[in-house]
Image (cartoon, rainbow, N blue to C red; front, side, top):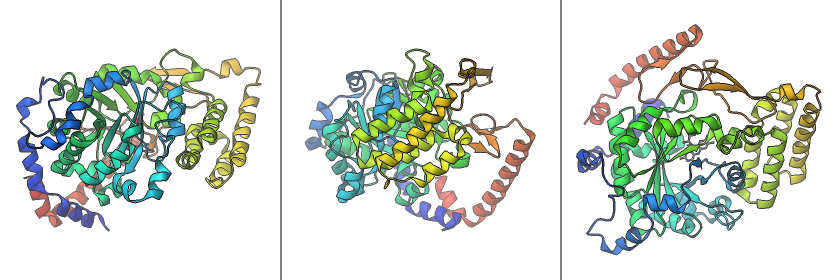
Length: 477
Ligand SMILES: Cc1cc2nc3c(=O)[nH]c(=O)nc-3n(C[C@H](O)[C@H](O)[C@H](O)COP(=O)(O)O)c2cc1C
């Protein structure tokens, strides 16, 4: 399907009258300074009100969880049990499961068992735990949520997935086009599920629309809101920087007591405090930062072995957890976790990259153990160098205009990953920031490439506009 067909298909599915009707129902004068959790059941829906009124609400739920400040993001195939156990040891105070597909979860026992088993939420202190689903059918979502409710603290609705598969299946960030459905999905859980419902959203470029959207999500019954400060379009090469300013704006304009998690841009443990201070969020969620360095949540002290763990030590620790857990999801996720934790290390020891590449979920733990042993051997040799004390340090670079610095971390320690855009490190130079129109670029080469890309996009946009005039007009309604 080409781009124009895809746009047509999306427009044909979006109900614009419903879109405007739910927006109209949200009285924007209510957006500021409301007491928390003004949500609840509709008076006409008496049969459903029992669960909604008896379960813990926003702040009480947050307190019961121990007021977590550091959160492992929901990550497909990655935030599974073994990873959560490891992350909790390194400072994560709340974890989300990977996103599960609600309908598949209900209808396919095979899918369900591969994603969720009796150890999840029960083994190795796997709490507090939020289970995330994507869905577009309120009944399937409720059924799926009921299946996990006994072993989790809340169920989250994914409203942020921007991938093509989410567009096709109409879920995740593509529900941003159907507020009425979002409201129904959340409200059905709020009214009928035994545990609270929460939601994770992305932002629009339009700050006020983002605010109305967030308020609608809360109005439907979400008890926590996680806001990923990127728009739906910011993915892959266009990922760019999350916008903490929009997060602060939303935080300031939502009810003061609203439990609010900020998500995006965490590279180092020191970013957690900056994010908390700049957004005044309750907790900071991290995905990529956590995957490449499970030590990213360690803030108790400046212990370098906790904040930037040695790859040999962390790999061994993680591998032992995988063996102990021995669940399909954890086995399945192992290869990807190896690659990410070893990312910088494998840039030097490329032969090992090929070896991991050839090893799969079908190999035995013995085979995987061989890889862990090889990493232990190589790093062991590094630590025999006479000048290792001088080499084994994390150095701060100069303070950047965004308020902190990049760090130089030895390659045998876990560290953040910088995506390359136009040959430049992203997060460092060539950035689009959600909700801001300008592109920040510093090198001439990157500037020229960006200008060319923008021109091409503009030209493409104009020709598409001609062909797509009707739906685009409709969108403006
Ligand atoms: C490997 C991977 C898998 C992800 N899977 C999910 C998911 O299942 N549900 C979801 O809401 N977001 C998912 N995300 C998005 C993250 O939760 C997070 O919102 C995003 O990566 C921004 O946070 P970061 O800047 O800390 O990476 C995923 C991200 C990554 C990198």
